[in-house]
Amino acid sequence: MNTALTSFFEAHRVLLAPMAGVSDTAFRTLCREKGADLTYTEMVSAKGLSYANEKTRRLLELAEGEQTVAVQLFGHEPEVMAQQAVWIEREMGSSLAYLDINMGCPARKIVSKGDGSKLMETPELAREIIERVVDSVSVPVTCKFRRGYALGEESAVSFAMMAQAAGASAVAVHGRYAMQYYSGSADWDVIAKVKDAVSIPVIGNGDVRCGDDAVALMERTGCDAVMIARAAEGNPWIFADVKAALAKSERPAAPDFRERLDTARRHAALLERRGEKNIVRMRKHAMWYLAGLPHASVARKQLNSCSSLADFDRVFDELRRAIEGEDKQHV
Ligand SMILES: Cc1cc2nc3c(=O)[nH]c(=O)nc-3n(C[C@H](O)[C@H](O)[C@H](O)COP(=O)(O)O)c2cc1C
Image 1: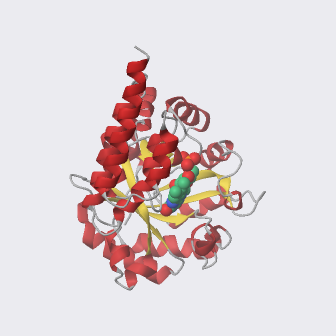
Image 2: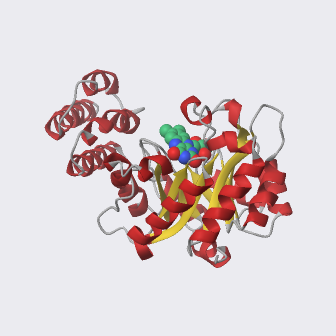
Image 3: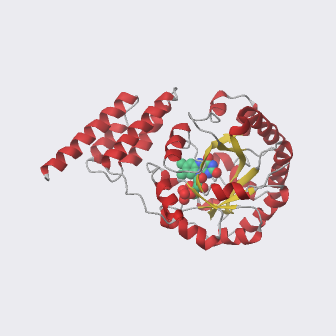
């Protein structure tokens, strides 16, 4: 059984993309607080789950107070995908908004196994995976893919039609070829073509960097929701900006350095709470939060050796003092 997601996306138009190594519970918490209507987990290996791998299972954990999340699964074996979809649905119950299947990841270690975007080259297998997963669970199933696999291979429209026929409840389209990785710019026209070709909701993705971009993407393509990845790095405030732009209400002011540092500090505390070595992830997040701040170059060097919450707090404190000192000199 499958449920249409049309009305869901009327109320959830702004989504945080699945991001391996980034969209963990800590980051999702901040993006939700700033206005993301729905967030995705990092991509989760069906194979890893089938081995009851603890690290893989932890990717399914919910953040404190998180009501729902979309889980993204990757793999290429229909049976394993279907079995693990069932397991996820049972474990997560009503906190599972829907299950998304990754058919867009271009990373070498993923495509070399036939997973991710490589499934765009094997649409019959992709169809079987979608059908098997859809038949096995009652939550909606979506899939996320790209403009095509190889450069110039325009397969998004036929792939979307295949996904719809196989039972997908929505599709997310990133307007770059897989083999383009992240270079060049996303082609939004392909998203418009997919929207014209299918009746299920279409999530537009690629190069949304501010509220105006989100409005432009929706107007140009007619997509039902926008998905944001890189522009949210070190910038969860983008969700508030996008929400305001879509609602045509007053846009929030950009965060000042104090707010950026406070949020970075909170992010570090949330990662620390996750235990294990999660705090190390804060190095890259902190680089992103600090980008463009005065005196950030010294701080950036120190971040590489931070390995505890106290280490990060020390860097943030020093940077705050340096910026405040400079501000006073200018009074
Ligand atoms: C660090 C990083 C990790 C990503 N991980 C995933 C992933 O796990 N699954 C997926 O479908 N896409 C993944 N993506 C792709 C994004 O979801 C998104 O499709 C892409 O970045 C284009 O959107 P953007 O222009 O808003 O960044 C990742 C992207 C980045 C930058």
